[in-house]
Picture 1 (spheres, rainbow, N blue to C red):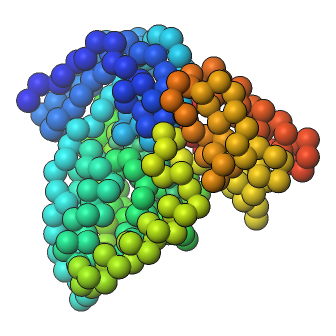
Picture 2 (cartoon, protein in one colour; picture 1 turned 120 degrees about the horizontal axis):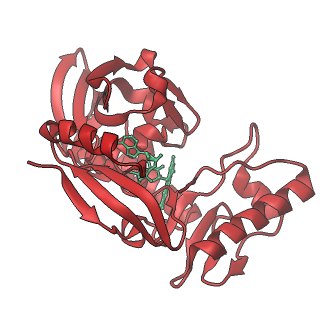
Length: 293
Ligand SMILES: Cc1cc2nc3c(=O)[nH]c(=O)nc-3n(C[C@H](O)[C@H](O)[C@H](O)COP(=O)(O)OP(=O)(O)OC[C@H]3O[C@@H](n4cnc5c(N)ncnc54)[C@H](O)[C@@H]3O)c2cc1C
């Protein structure tokens, strides 16, 4: 299949917060045969490239952006690769949706991913952000990753050659700028029933404390060392604070939600308001977890 170029892609349609204007173009890669064309496109274009997954951790500004979005639409797998005792190596394309991978693992009776139940996004995004929940980070399960860069093509790196830390991933080589193409992770054999039970428990816990069904981009701020950003924002009185159609959630102060007609200007102003209020009250600098394009 050829590289597909979509002019003026809407960022509102491509982000879970449903905010933002348009980018100049979106280049959609379907399989490895498109990568040479992507390389040529990137050399030719002067636009700022940005790899977009499911847009569940992004805030896109209003208006038009001189950016080229790159989407990895590789949905190969998940598939079983090899069994080592009761452990199973599973391979999956970066364009797969994370909930889809979890659903497959549940049906296959493979345990390990349950704590990530309720996190939207793609597998590529889960690696790039080292997405985590209830003490588990995606990187904990990864054995190796296939990456691509225009200069080096496709190549595999073992997990120990990569840098995974709190909401951070870097390949550790080639200036850290690579497309995530495929991943292999290790899961443990269990039963579909036990995996489903664990997933349900994690989801119930999440639903009780986070606005999982409202338009958001997950947590706005990273937790500072030894602190909870949500608790700090709550104690600073930010729960429920609104500006236009944007608000800090009543349920969890670290979730910025779009109540229906929000815009990015209001979102960014509220984020700054939250950051300044916490700094003034507690002397703590909050760092954003969401990526502001
Ligand atoms: C309701 C809700 C709950 C959430 N709960 C959690 C949670 O509990 N824990 C948590 O960690 N996060 C959570 N999130 C945030 C978000 O879902 C994760 O960060 C997710 O992993 C992002 O994946 P994505 O595909 O949407 O990435 P995007 O938001 O599209 O992009 C995020 C980053 O990943 C990069 N990226 C995406 N795909 C690739 C690729 N193939 N190659 C290279 N780079 C890539 C992008 O360039 C960008 O830097 C939540 C979000 C929502 C809306």
